[in-house]
Image 1 (cartoon, rainbow, N blue to C red):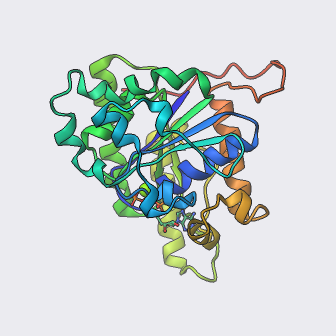
Image 2 (cartoon, rainbow, N blue to C red):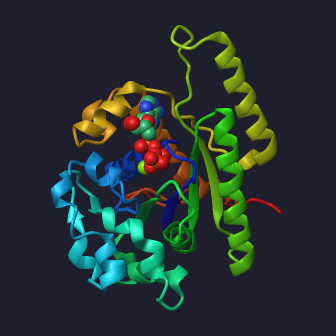
Length: 281
Ligand SMILES: Nc1ncnc2c1ncn2[C@@H]1O[C@H](COP(=O)(O)OP(=O)(O)OP(=O)(O)O)[C@@H](O)[C@H]1O
Ligand SMILES: [Mg+2]
């Protein structure tokens, strides 16, 4: 399945979620391809690719027709492959303009490798560019990370509004949206009481409005998630016993539950026949 991690607000934890969720799935034995769709290439850099070695990247596939297999790299993590992003993605709107069915370009490019992977995870840039629309079109489901702060509410509303409009336009009503709270602060000592109250108010507000679309797992604020990026490692290699590692693993389990996906090597049990949750109009 293809999951796009998207929010047009910047700095909400899209890349951290893409990298660590991909690593969590890989650790469970799934075959995972992480696709960096951001010109900042943060996902690629976070996995230890030096800035000078970002090419060939997804932009060579999208804009120059390079075969997708030729740009897939192994990461140091068993089961996790990567397609890097690079600065050329900045011009994606311009470069995709002349391509027919341009909003399907990314989805089409995945066809040759779709069966090779259990999960393709797209880390989107903080904008609703044509490339992000491509990621929305290609995906079977979305994860929208948000920080429980007032300014993030607007990003959430715009992102979900765009997804809903697009789903309506192309009739993909079964695509599931999952909102993920990130950088949730539990540490009362480092966080003022008023800020904690504000945080709970926002979580409550979003819960009232989007109900079942919200993941039960909240990713807490944990400095090790910032540190891990500079070591080119996932949280599972850098700080396997940290709360952040436990929470990203729990998120991975929740995603599997939501989509009724069985772990490799496990037999089908009498699993919950819970429907994938869709945003209702
Ligand atoms: N749970 C967390 N606790 C502490 N720091 C975090 C957490 N999640 C992410 N960060 C840090 O916050 C910053 C922004 O996170 P990240 O890069 O994942 O967001 P993003 O949504 O991908 O940003 P952009 O919109 O620029 O692509 C990074 O420095 C990251 O290391
Ligand atoms: Mg990012």
